[in-house]
Length: 408
Image 1 (cartoon, rainbow, N blue to C red):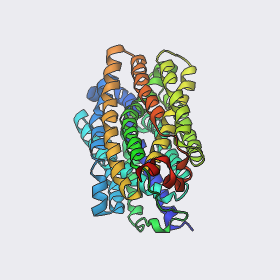
Image 2 (cartoon, rainbow, N blue to C red; image 1 turned 30 degrees about the vertical axis):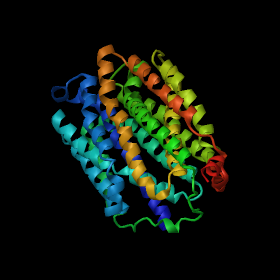
Image 3 (cartoon, helix red, strand yellow; image 1 turned 180 degrees about the vertical axis):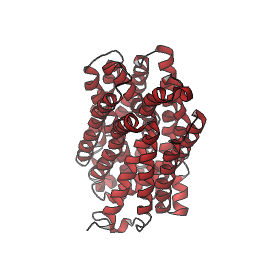
Image 4 (tube, one colour; image 1 turned 45 degrees about the vertical axis):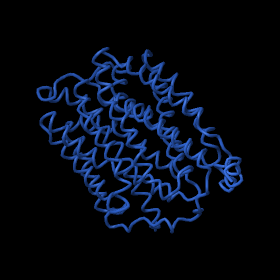
């Protein structure tokens, strides 16, 4: 029999899977749409992938008020709205018979998906007790599984039943989970074992951590979204070189992305025993050269370095989530997560049109990978600027830290 806290974690982890899955259906569905209904959607990848721009704008912008809404409506009500609203938008996108209508329903899906990260992440962090890294790492695996399953399931469903069902089937399942979640009691943090009072921390370090966190959010939003969007197309261009091999493209994209899930789980465990900077630095150093190599490599090496890039990108997500948990008090986390994901939208929303524009201009994804490598270099600078403090692992030491003594 699962405890109420464990059931909450199961539903929130499932929501993370559906959030990232739903946002990436279009990336693979486009490869089927140009073959199955070219008279409606055309035959060019660039304009079609850009249809998702409104979805990502809504997903990012509407994250901002979620912390405020949670304080008034409650986190449970918002999570029920997430499951049912995002699922309905997903399913209705499968009924679209024009690019405009498809973009509209994707926008609805993105609007409800904006609920998840500010609310779901704050619940996961509180449910983690004194093992926040592990809880965030496992939650990250579910999000990564959504990213990995999106091209695999979308490609197979679209190939077998048509692109429409690639939206309808997961949409109906998402709504069903929402109805089940509505029967659950609200999350109660007092039931979590091992929860310790949040320590008083020097404000100068908190400000430094928050500034770095916001810079990372803006940059990583673009890199994360762009990489996950272009991955199916990258596999098609460099490995299959034949758009009719959609199932093969889906499997290859899944294979590269699942490495990110393995990394998130490992990073989650490391974070509970290492400072954030010690875990962050190797990931930041691995990402830039991987993206540079992907700008010109061809054949099977593409799969290897796509896996390395995915591991670095998704591993950084776990580090970023834990940064907020370690440096921001619980009562402020939902609001800061809201601000952080809204800042991240500035990059995430630009990913879809940027990839489409660069691909149309160059005829391949080589230029896109070069641009992403340049953007990822900013993350490396942020990693260098982040504090490296043993107090993260022994919070009781913050009270006697040099900054705390200087402030007295």
